[in-house]
Amino acid sequence: MKRFTRYDEGFTGLEAAIVLIAFVVVAAVFSYVVLGAGFFTTQKSQETVHTAVGQASTSLELVGNVYGAGSGTSALKYIQITVATTAGGGSLDLSKLTVTYRDDAAFDEIGYDAPNSKLDGTEATVAPTVGKWIVSQVLNGKGSTQTALLEPGTQFTLQLHPPDGANTNVNQKFTIELKPAIGAVLPISRTVPAAIESVNQLY
Image (cartoon, rainbow, N blue to C red):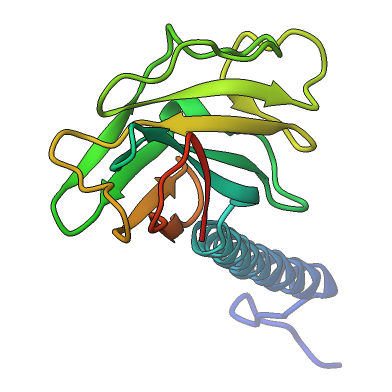
């Protein structure tokens, strides 16, 4: 008969199961951590792509023609444009719109004149002051609009008065840049006609 001494050791099935379970748990935790880090990185990459696309594409577009109101017979008094959001774009707060004017004699920012803007659907009767722009009328708006929030399907008619020193005489070229809070700059370049009337379509 074989004898078992006190120093004989055995590896039972229970101990093997405990070791196996420990390995499985450690592997599962490690896999969860790795997968979680991968999902987080993928999500951040998607956010970066969407943000870049939103910043690179303009969310504001010009609607119709650009007009200039004559002042006497030698220069434009103010410029009128109509803007809307691009197809598929969201709402834009035009009170945060940055407007700049540039020609061969002046380059300056035009500020928003909120008190003289008409946001209730009626048409403004007062022209913008020097170096300011106003919302002269809201088109296709839904009800009374009390904020300068340009919603999809709505159009805002803007009137812009060039800054001091601007050259809006006959045959002069100028550029207006509209920079919304989100999106690319919308540049508008036009030339003052050779003969200035009270209302002029600019090309």
